[in-house]
Amino acid sequence: MITTIIVLSVLLVVSVFVNINQLRKQEDQSDYISDLEQSNLDYYEYFNGLKTKVNQANSEIRNADRQGAFEASDEVGTSFKLIKEVMEDLNRGVN
Image 1 (cartoon, rainbow, N blue to C red):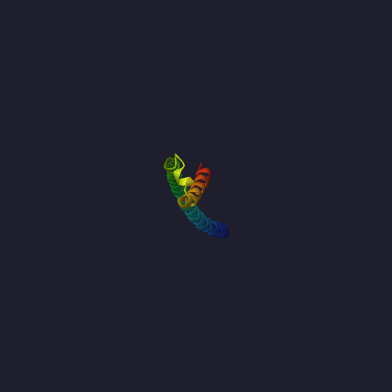
Image 2 (image 1 turned 90 degrees about the horizontal axis):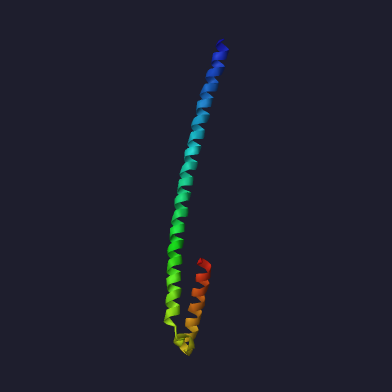
């Protein structure tokens, strides 16, 4: 009878420690998941802001050269074409 009580008491103590350990691990994972969700939300907001800015910049580049004056210029034309290509690549990448 006494050995049964001792064995059950030991098992109870071990079970309590195991449960406490599992609870700590679960809390750590919950914290990690919360941090990850916040990080994803921050990234999503940043990407949407970047997408808006790229679209605005692309529109401004197109409006700046409606008549083709910049693109036709020798000095400015090369730089403008490069900027325009970069803006088009960015616009394709974010849309």
